Length: 193
Image (cartoon, rainbow, N blue to C red; front, side, top):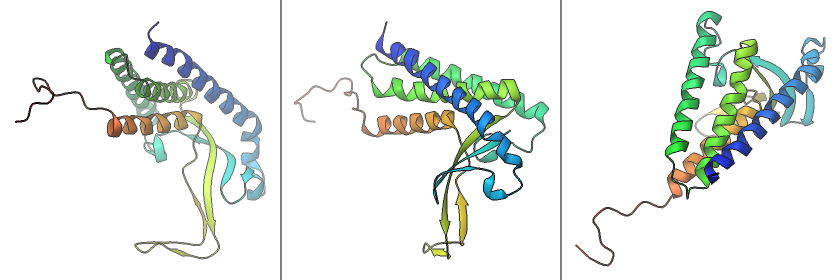
């Protein structure tokens, strides 16, 4: 078996299983907290002032894009877009040179993340998120161009599939930045023009 397919065969199922298992755990352990009468009891603090586990459902895409769309439009749209992305990833992997090592890992992570969130969309019409990163400021923080107000500032809640997609995209950028450029056709080494 070619290495790139082996990387996909190991990475994709591992990430999808981790994603689905943690989402099930979030439904069991965190979803009941959503209705806690005290807002301070609606999450589990992992690192105070930075990291919580908090159940959320996202009907849209990243940052809630498409949340307000009708489910009759939103669900098929995101399923079709995800299936097209999966097809495109598989096309690129198939055409990829065998000597590449970072690219198959990057594509496998993006593919696994897409599949993990697609499973949620197909079975429940929304994606389960539970990782809540935030920072808290006791007083406003002046950043020069802007000022952050006092209080908590949250990154949008996310899941393992989202981590796979983000890390995969970061690896793709690294590959684009640092990959060796193929030699120009027709140029012979040592000959100056």
